[in-house]
Every structure is written in C-alpha cells, then in structure tokens.
Amino acid sequence: MHHRHLVRILVLVLIISIIVSASSGMSLGADTGNVFALSDYQGHVGDTATVSLTLGGLVLLCAFELEIKFDPAFLSYIGRTDVDSDTVVNYNDTDSTIYINFVKMSNVTSGFKIADLSFKLISKTEATAIEVIVKKVGYYKDGMLSPENVDPNNISWINAIIVVTAAENDIVYGDVDGDGVVTPKDSMMLARYLAGWSGIMIDLAAADVDMDGVVTPRDTMLLDRFLAGWVGYSLPYNT
Ligand SMILES: [Ca+2]
Ligand SMILES: [Ca+2]
Image (cartoon, rainbow, N blue to C red; front, top):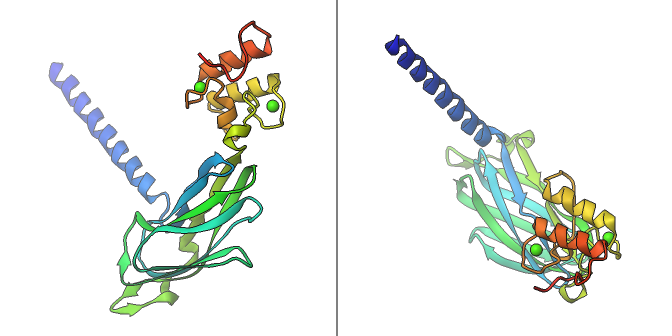
C-alpha cells in the first residue's frame, strides 16, 4: 500500500517535469523564426530615450538590412550609443529613417544586440511607435551567403512603443489620464492600472502623487482623499 503510494508520487513528479520542460521549450519556441525587436520606453518631454534593437528567435542570420521609422512630431533621433562592430547605422532626416546594415562572416545567435538607438522626447503623446521594417536578410551556409534561402514568413519584428509624458516641472499631479484636470476618472484609471487591467495607459509621473518614485495603492488613497476634499491633502502630497 505504502509502496504503491510512492510509485504514484513518482509518476506525478515525472508528469510535472515533462509539463515543465515542454512549457519552457514552448516559450523558447513561441517564435520559431527570427525576431527583430525594439524595446519600449516611457519618459518625460526633454528626456533621452534609449531603445535596444535586438535579434531573437531561431537565429541563423549573417546579413540584414533594416529601416527604422519614427514620427518626428514626437521624437528626434540623437544617434546610436552602442552598436555591434558589424553594424552600420545611417540616418536620413528628410524621411526620418534610420538605415541599419549588418554583414558578418558567420551567423549570429539568439539574444544578439544590434544597436542602442537614442531619441529625444520632444512632445507629449500616449503612444508613438518606432517601427522596424525588415528589407533584406541572409544567412551563411556552406561558406555562402544565402539570402534567397530565408523565408520572409520566418521573420517578424516588434516595434517600440514610446510613451511621452509632460515635462517633469510641468506635471499635474493626480491627472492620471492626462486630460489636464484631476477628477474621479483619474482615480478609477489608477485603480484599474494597479489592478493590472490590460490596455490602461496612464501618466506614471502624474500618478505618483506622493513623489516616492513608484505608483502604489498609497497614491490611489492620497488621490481619493484629495478628491474627497480632506483637509491637508493637496497634490503632490509631501510627507
Ligand atoms: Ca484627468
Ligand atoms: Ca507613489
């Protein structure tokens, strides 16, 4: 009886370990192709945003050409700050396009950082994208560059989403949704954000009403007290 119990536990452990290894394999294999990705950023007007351009997925590339486009109404390109020695970065300001060229005599591997690109945040916006466009790719096989062997369906790209909030000295504390006034809607938005609702874009600087650098339920509480007119609760709340 005791022995059978032990066997059952062992079988259970085996099944769990199979599930765990299968799911970790799945997270790696979620993208079976190559992925060019730009990291997201959130900051104030006047800040410098640095986004990393990386290559991930099942990587077998030795050459590629990318175009990176952005909206000059919100961002201005400063330059590249960290770049692989095989990467060439050029910028054309007439069409706000950054041209990335990469050629190496061997294939690069997953998790490869291509370059860091820096932008000045010039105007407030909830979300503006820095778009990656893949023009050409190629990989090395049998000592040959084989651009024709790359299936374009195996290449995907992830744009950066940049959120630009008001300049730091221009923050309306409590104006979580950025419409210029502090209302119960701001409290609702903040509560939803903290509850992890998806698709909630808030002004994190304005939401940090106690200015401790993090947005927490305490900020909601202070905002609610301010909205309810409690004595001594002005925003930002400094104690
Ligand atoms: Ca508001
Ligand atoms: Ca806070």
